[in-house]
Image (cartoon, rainbow, N blue to C red):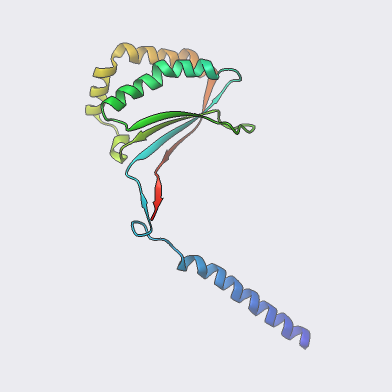
Length: 157
């Protein structure tokens, strides 16, 4: 009988502990706009896996295509900023580069004839054709798009 009472007491203790653990997160939930904010800005992140030894070739190509196009988009106010990051903690199968574009808001992600026409007027068909050619002839041979992400910054209050 003593063994049964101890087992019952132990079982009740475990159930009370489990109930406390389950209830605790509900009591500690944060409220958006009161405890934290989510940015209007959005970051478009593309992770790229390169063939061994291709980083400098790829970066050289990006300078005349991706970087140049982002400079135009930035000057037009279509994007806020852009950056390239190199992964320094490479693990098997990990990406090598991260291409980041900061957009001012969600609306800037959607299609816009006005933005497209404005960009094409500044960028030009010649640059667009050269960029497309480089993607087809070079990039597709030395890189693989590893992932595409859209992130928003969370700021705790």
